[in-house]
Amino acid sequence: MKITAALSHGADTPFEIAEVDLDEPRADEVLVELRAVGICHTDLTMRAVWPAELSPAVLGHEGAGVVAAVGANVRAVRPGDHVVLSYRRCGACTQCAAGHPMYCHDFRTLNATGMRPDGTTTMHRDGAPVYGSFFGQSSFASHALAYETNVVVIGADVDLSIAAPLGCGVQTGAGAVLNVLQPGIDASLVVFGAGGVGLSAVMAARATGVSTIVAVDPVADRRTVAAQLGATATIDPTVDDVVDAIRELTGDGATHAVDTTANGTVINQAVTALARRGTLALVGIGAPQIPLDVGNVVGGGKTIRGVIEGDAVPQDFVPQLLALHATGRLPLEKVIRTYAFDDIDTAAADAADGTTIKPVCLTI
Ligand SMILES: NC(=O)c1ccc[n+]([C@@H]2O[C@H](COP(=O)([O-])OP(=O)(O)OC[C@H]3O[C@@H](n4cnc5c(N)ncnc54)[C@H](O)[C@@H]3O)[C@@H](O)[C@H]2O)c1
Ligand SMILES: [Zn+2]
Ligand SMILES: [Zn+2]
Image (cartoon, rainbow, N blue to C red; front, top):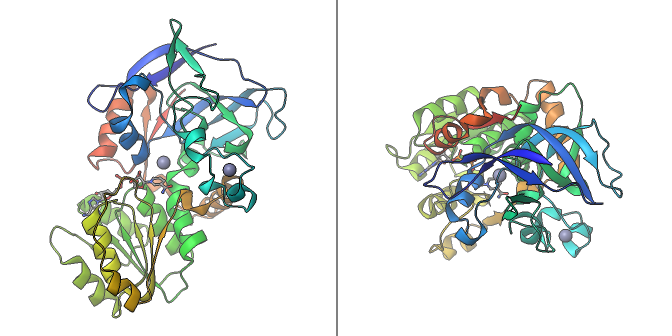
């Protein structure tokens, strides 16, 4: 079928809004008519590093929409279901079987090679491949082919522009707190980077009553929003000594921290600022190799833990997040700004320069 998609040709070239051919759903595929798609920093990173030989490509991995058709073997969803799209998993490897599909052995194959695992592309233009299958969706488009493992059915009354970012950015930040760190009321949590992921961590910490929540970000507007969302203090790393400021606020240091910056200097600040037996969750993607004060980690009994997708199984966690939102404890509308799909270049630029925390493009 003919669909409209935002083709990526690299970070320095504008998106090309174009008509392309999308395959009819195969037996295991779900055709989703998209209504909204969030932009996550991972889209910006992948757009910049995407191999030229796999271009043009359709990125986008925070899609939400309505199921239009399903393949013969699909049981989990039906046409008309409202769905949030998330990451794809194999369902059979040791990590999937153990309930940790975000560490699926086939994660890369299923989410980031630009094609189906058999090497075919779901899209073409004038007979030439258009690469996609990004997070098993490629949702910078009017329609996407998804799979049973990465569709989450939600209520038809849920605003799809609010639901879209649950599939990655919100799930990642909130899950790092609720599923991994699980700070208690007396904890002190420091969030490095107050973007879509970091502020989701702030909202989740606030929702669970964590008493000290500190947000670190050089962008003044983001620190302001962090305070509105429940941060009890904010730090401007361009002005303050971050480690000293955290010690002043917490005494012994942070019991818990989340890094969303993927910046080596920041990660070292986070390790140093941890309290004894504190835990740092690393979620930023693309961090360089960095020196680490191992003695400080050992002597302090500190834990450094990588986290993918908030350790969340989307079919379980997205409904929990929607329930939090329904009770006002995950006020996502405070970080979301909507854009017309044709304005995706503006949306991406606003995400990159910090103007908008969570851009969501409306595909219809
Ligand atoms: N692990 C996962 O599964 C997963 C999932 C989603 C996103 N991510 C990654 O998480 C990261 C954050 O994503 P996002 O969408 O929130 O991005 P974002 O760009 O909105 O947020 C990053 C924030 O870091 C801030 N920052 C920059 N330098 C800083 C410094 N020195 N100290 C403190 N803050 C600083 C920026 O101002 C920005 O607000 C990205 O690397 C993204 O790829 C990982
Ligand atoms: Zn697996
Ligand atoms: Zn993402």
